[in-house]
Image (cartoon, rainbow, N blue to C red; front, top):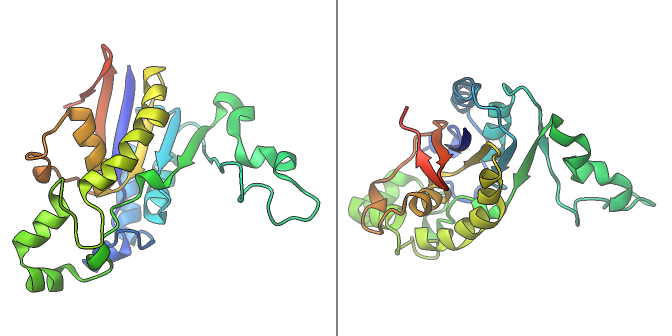
Length: 234
């Protein structure tokens, strides 16, 4: 049986403060850490082969905590380029290839790929603002439309449709082929980047997607069966 698991990050500091976090790079709270470890225990029965996350620290922290209870260690892959081989005189990326590529370790590790395609929504006008104050200013209904509808996003920010244009192609090119090859894959990301993937996977309509929301650090599990992903209701 092959699995694809989606997990929204644990509670982060700006979640605790009830602000629109978006691209603000905020770490987990103590509760967020505890919830991520609980999620790790829930997922111990699935042996992951591959992991994906966003560039934001709250998602990366959550994923690393989840993988801490796996049989194999997680291994953060640093793509070739500016990060690899830069900054040490006389060294090049090729001299430190081990730092970027876990293939040499074979199946002994879980490679972790981090990509901005899986980042949270950029909230534009709402970024970093208190949710209560924004609801008082613009009204509950308008905030709901900006944050949950498919076509409309907050002023200066991304709609769910915008997020889909970056998250879905990345999923189709980099993640789904691994699942089809029989690899168990976990994606740890954010409310809206995951909602975009769920809409795509389950073929949810534009009208129905506003009702879809994800709890923090709670796995959503799909089985790959007969050429398609099926939600595991057990």
